Length: 482
Image (tube, rainbow, N blue to C red; front, side, top):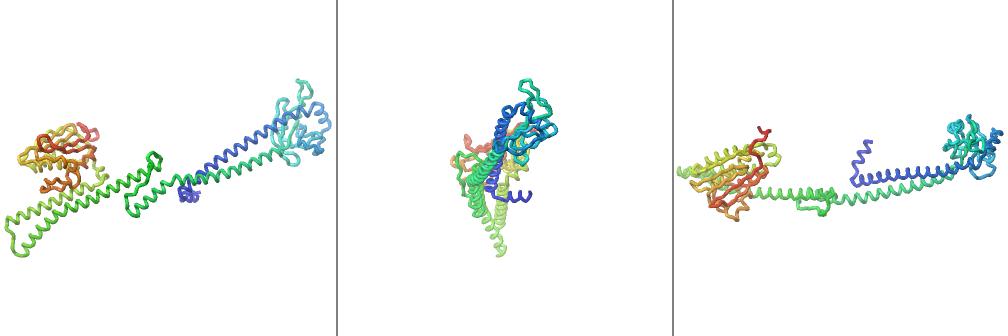
């Protein structure tokens, strides 16, 4: 059985579907055929029983029964050439039979027949199958007969009459019906198997296309392939095809973003690396030629190297932050006191811009996010405000009901540049000379979106820029966070 199950599982899906359809149809046809055969058999036996129920009153009378009992145990197996296939005999409680002279033959007596002979009720009769002395199948009806012609006549004691007819014609009809049902069932099963195979092929054609598409992608890594799907189709195969198309689109988009990230990262790394190499070569040449640089120039050169190294470290950190997967982030998500995160970011911002006036109005708000990522996002927003604020300028920070606003009084962002501020490596032409990698706001957007919030940048009234971060949460910590 296990071997058959393994062989079945090894078959193609269309073969298994065809076999299942054929098996289901075979079971249904077999059930209908067997039911039909038994119904026809019952009807034919009822007709035979109807014929037998009238034999007693028409064929026998009390005088015949008395005469037959007087001549018993006279029996005969000779029908005297009468082709009626009618059997008539009297049976006693001890199983002895008295056969009418013109009976077709002797019918075998059963315990049921003897039980009818013992029963004095005239209304008791029974029908059953039996056989004659030559082994031919017959249908028997056993009943009592009255001793007289009156309605109150008592039945003969310990005697019953057995009337029977041959089942030869009935069995021939049933055999012909069984053969017809068998042929029809066979044709139906074969047709069902063929229809199942055709249906399986038609139903699995989209799966074949999907398989070919997957094999093509695995072979060529071409993610532009799409499987055509009818717009109004909602079956499982259509859903699977749509899911594959969505997956291919997502993979293609991810690959494009990856390639763009690599290209942009290479471009951004090239400038500080080139400058760093130039400065290091200049220092090395001065040492090799024995002509040291003036102390002021050497100090400036070392400061430039240090700044470039810091810029490289910051860029690499930003790239690592952007390359982290969603699964890695999900392990660190927890309830965070947003006001504490803002306070920590404000302390770092005041150190970077000591000459600036930074005012803050922070109210309690608790969110679900990754603590370090959320703090880095707020720091990036404040760093931008510090970077673009004029010397001695002011920065206004407010956190109320989950909405964080950071407003500076710098030059602001032109309207045509606002749609690009959250793109990776995008930097305003006016800020190219300032330090930065162009990834800060991109990291902010990603962190806020992962926390279920929204972030936006807009020009502030009276000049400057206002950054707005909205995060879902509550003014009090949930019970599980306390």
